[in-house]
Image (cartoon, rainbow, N blue to C red):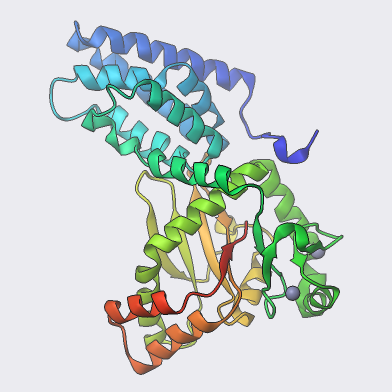
Length: 355
Ligand SMILES: [Zn+2]
Ligand SMILES: [Zn+2]
């Protein structure tokens, strides 16, 4: 079996059955709320158990089961029959921290979008609106479908960072994770430090493949790239401010997808322990600091049981122009957003996210 098609997380038949049963119970309880408002505490109880099971299950696989069992219909019935403007807290939690964030996973997104399309007549209910991020992610998915299979990638010799179709690269035969445009680039990176980290790249790559299919990785890259483009001016301005205060500051950008609204923030590179996005992380830090902006540390926090999972999707640039330009602005003490926006528009080098 193709290893990338395996989703071996903690989902098992028992969990799927429990979730299916809870969804059906929730749906049945929701139907009684219209005639018997006193049934609401029962619905809340169903929701609390349900949310815990889905939230603590890695990969959100169980959410797909719930949606196929009529979860969104049950939420809508509840929302329509709730007399006050305040939705039950259980529903708010479910929409904000379970259904909305799950749209970062391609399979869940497709299930959610399908359920929404069936319910489109009633979906205008404002209570259900927090789960709407699926609209923009569906557009990204359709964009990927129409763009075809060509996937751009960057050479893993950070001094080169040549960007071209992934199929044109040569793979490191040891880890199968890093790609080079030429034998010379492979030799340079081997001497630079890959020989010490090759085995750790293999471990990190295997863990990632066990958690995300290749389609999901491609989709997640497209999502973070769009979000980066949308927030580029803000991120650039924060960088300039940081570098004005400390020209040697090294930072990573965190894209947090664990709630329905995306949060983007810059942090010093001090992530350790459980927050580390893979055993090859120290080498990524070294490469980022040697790259002069050709490798930016973009870190994704995705919902994945036990609160979340950290995945690194470095932004690779073919040239250092943009990075050097921001450093120059910082040195001159220019931190006006308008000027930076102009700068972003003018200085657009070829960029790609790798995951
Ligand atoms: Zn190269
Ligand atoms: Zn290797």
